[in-house]
Amino acid sequence: MKFSLWPNAGRRPSEILDAARQVDDAGWYGVWVADHYMPNTGDESRAAGEIHEAWALLPAIAAVTERVRVGTLVSPTSVHHPAVLANRAATLDHLSGGRMVLGLGAGWQVNEHAAYGIDLEPPGARVTRFEEAIRIVRSLLTEDRTTFAGKVYAISDAPCDPKPVQEQLPILVGTSSPRMLRITARHAQEWNTWGTPEVAAERRAGLVAACEKVGRDVATMHSSVNALIDLDGETPATGRAILTGSAEQLVDRMGAYAEAGFDEFILPDGNLGDTAAERSDRVARIKAEVIDRL
Image (cartoon, rainbow, N blue to C red; front, side, top):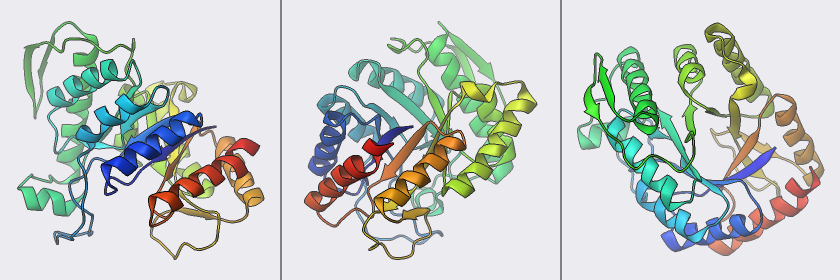
């Protein structure tokens, strides 16, 4: 498997860029940034906490690195117009020399939609919007002109120039719902989920079924998974998937992801320390004690 880092967008920009440089120099595969405007509370309430904007961070990350892929994990189509997403992604592909991955999702975080007056539609309508958006984005990135008439969007003879450096700029979708998985199988190149090896394997089985239903070879779909890592046994209980154990145990857990068909493990840094120095040390330890032993 390949390994990537997911720095918390609430860190100081200088610390995010230092972390990106560290993993780029160490041979990691990618650096991902969440696309949100405030900490999640699970409802409409607002919580204090700084969150730096993903599309402002990505050009800086691209500028200070040379090898890692850079991308959003993920940008909600409930918030961003598909023409904006396509043009941003194409420009970032040029800035990075062909290393951009466009991560998309339908949108879910209640408080940021409520705070900014952005409609968070019912699930069915939200997925319809997403399906139209991903089709428009792909067309804008590949076709000379795009015309599209749907329930949500109307695009007429629209350009997106320059086109990406990559022949096919990857679109990643983060989802687990059956309808979204079928859309992913039809229109995306990559798929992402959270989970321990056991949970992630069950979710990937859903992707396999979706690919079979639309006639897609699942082997052509890059699969990535996110989970926290607790190498020191110090992380308190969390609602997110977490892998706890010795280096030897974590090597085995990573092997379970590979056996389940995953191509990439994405490491969030949310539990790796309160200071930049602590996080840097733990990232280096995970690389030396776990990743390099696989």
